[in-house]
Image 1 (cartoon, rainbow, N blue to C red):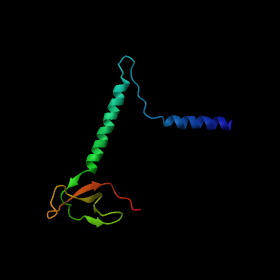
Image 2: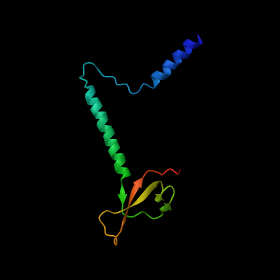
Image 3: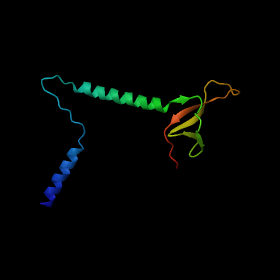
Image 4: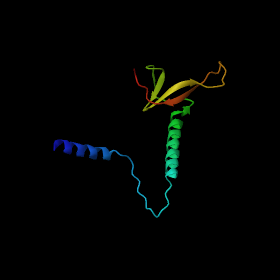
Length: 108
């Protein structure tokens, strides 16, 4: 009895985590490949937005940023973090820095 009840409850829990379920009317045409392609395009767009946000470059940091050196040299500006990078194609006399937005570093 206990084994049957345990098995039944386990099956209910497993079904709860099955994922998205799509229901469509049989009278309407359905293309599963179009759904797959749309999900793939949406995922790629979200990934591009994340990379664009992560690669945000700024010329100068706002006031009030704090220099942190652990685990590497970076700046904290409120809840945002920036890492300095030399600006490409500048002479050594005019060495300028750009600051790239990075995810919050984890101290080791």
